Amino acid sequence: MLLKLQHVRATIQTMPNTSNLPPLNRQFVAHFGEMGSKWGINRTVGQIYALIFISQRALNADEIAEMLSFSRSNVSMGLKELQSWRLVQLRHQPGDRREYFEAPADVWEIFRVLAEERRRREIEPTLSMLRMALLEKAGSDEERHAQDRMREMYELIDRLMKWFDDVQRLSPDTAMRLMGMGATVTKVLTLKDRITGSGKDKKNAG
Image (cartoon, rainbow, N blue to C red; front, side, top):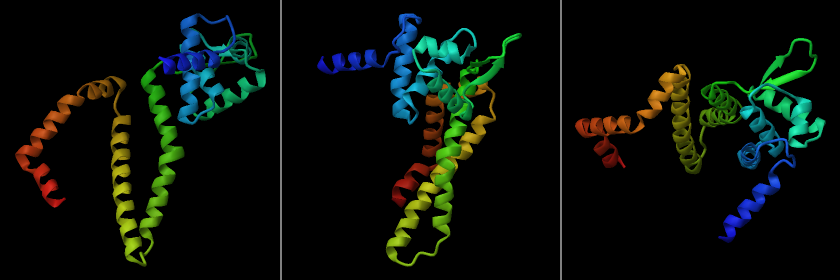
């Protein structure tokens, strides 16, 4: 009970100090900012994106600053970061020199772009480091063991990235159907292992 009360208080403290948003919207914005800090992005950036994501129309920086009670400079920096992640789209209104921002309408597109950016920023540097390490000549048993472990990691990540590339080429509808088949695919693969004995072979090899 105490933990729940502490969580509620923490959520209320992170809510933008404004009455310009409905309670449900404020709760979503606050939660997104709280989770964003755990995902490695700035809390302010997370709240800005949450507001843009649920907005019925494109918003300009002044509107965002007013709705979230943020400084204009913080909003500008947050928008630049979101643009670098390709998570917001820039729009212009006729007769208005201000820049307006909106999130992609397709949630699958948002996921795809976010996954691509995280891959470019985090996974590809790791793969590059592993490739370089595996090209080095091991000079001791310890290094050979380390390379074996690195090779296992590299092969797993590389296979996952190839699978991700295949999924990226699917249409959103096909991708959603594929995800919905999760349990069915598992059953088919399990049946295949039983028929071919692949699972037993792996256990015996271990």
